[in-house]
Image (tube, one colour):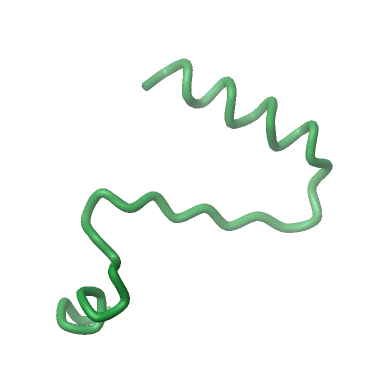
Length: 39
């Protein structure tokens, strides 16, 4: 995405994009919890 378009959409360099499908909500929460422990 061009820089001008990102700026127009409010997309910054520190944005975290999350793409999920049809996973169970409890599985997603557990995955995020584990991932955030590493940050």
